[in-house]
Length: 118
Image (tube, rainbow, N blue to C red; front, side, top):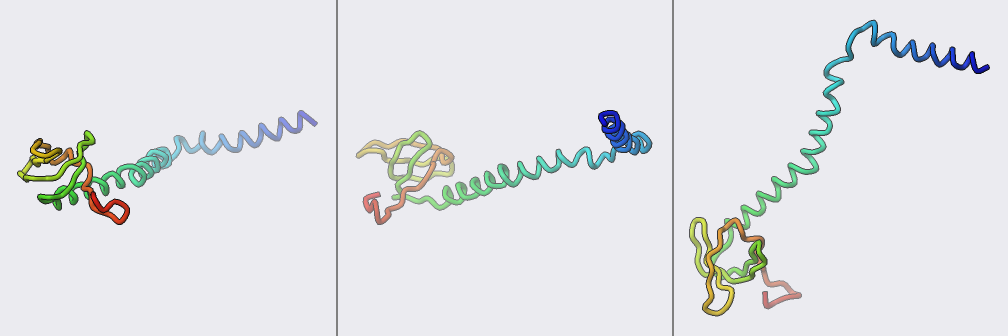
């Protein structure tokens, strides 16, 4: 019984190996298919959402104006008092102003129903 099973398994293995040996190497496109699939998954799960987030951030930076309350990357919250091409002057306390690069603005704080003082 065991010898019949091993002969059957050997015959099945030989049937699978024989076409590859007779035909030569496998199709090169099939070899690259997993790499292409991984790249597609990476694009749709990582690259595309990051590009969308970058566009939204750039639109927010283009829309800021004097009087907006902002938060910087470092966590500093203040009100915009001046705008330049690459720098923004932010008042963080009465009569305390700092210059911040445009790229370091994280968000614009808008008044909401829950927080009308924002």
